[in-house]
Amino acid sequence: MENRKILFITYDTSGYYTPVYEALQKRFQSVEFYNTAKMSYRYANFLERTYSFFYKLITGNKLKNYLKYQKVIDSLESDKYDVTIMIRPDLFFDSQLELLKEKSSRIVAYYHDSINEIPRKDKVIHFFDKVFSYEKKDVKDFNLQFLTNFIYREKPQTSTAEYDAFTVMSSDYRVAALKKLAAFFETRGVKAKLIVSGKNRGDASSSIEYIDRRMSLEEASDEVQKSRILVDIHKYGVQNGLTFRVFEAMGFRKKLITTNADIVNYDFYDPNNICVIDPENIVIPDAFLSTPYREIATSIYQKYTVEGWLDQILTP
Image (cartoon, rainbow, N blue to C red; front, side, top):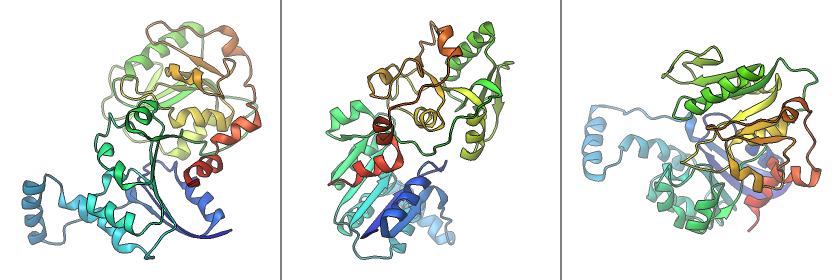
């Protein structure tokens, strides 16, 4: 176990980064962890609320947000960290990032959203020694380091499945593509559990289940185990980085149907395991639906584990 001080700050509503924290604890004697998604701030009194009104009027920023993330700064247990790792650093204010940089011998960030979707990410790059991104376009345009998401959980493939295909996704423009895939499944006799989470229920469909809450990672993982194939409708037109659903399929040894055509350029791509579809012209070979999952070479698989991901994050 290395005698280095690690500071890990994330914004994680789902729990994908908990295994990263656990892996850091196994490697280092001192790991300080903050998940800002679990933090909140309430104004202490009317005076503070009034001040916040003028603060926003002058700066364009919410005082509540500053005070929320200032909780992290005020709670720091060390004057100096060997490595600071940040997910969603754009949520912090510049003065806070400057202080974190001063307290860190090395500070790095990871972007699992495109800069196109969260523009402020471009404005905070200069605070970091390295910024990693899963979005190839951002890597090229902003001189970042390329790094994919990771396998957050590993479980053997179950011997029997309750249904052929599964996905859960938020209610947005991608639902139109999911409806077309659901219709295709119906014509082919594919038993699918397709869930859309959000307030906008859309048109009723016998093949799509609408829920008005966010499905927990544990619930989703249980459903993944019950299916032979996972479905990934990525945010086409917005970002092309590989979603966690791709690595979920790898970790659970499930086949994958995806709209992300760039996946064919990755070393783990195997047409036996991964089928790329165009929602406007869906073609899924019978052989893909009927044949079992084929194991990925261990040397390739290990690159995408949490440990492999951390190796790259921690390399100077």
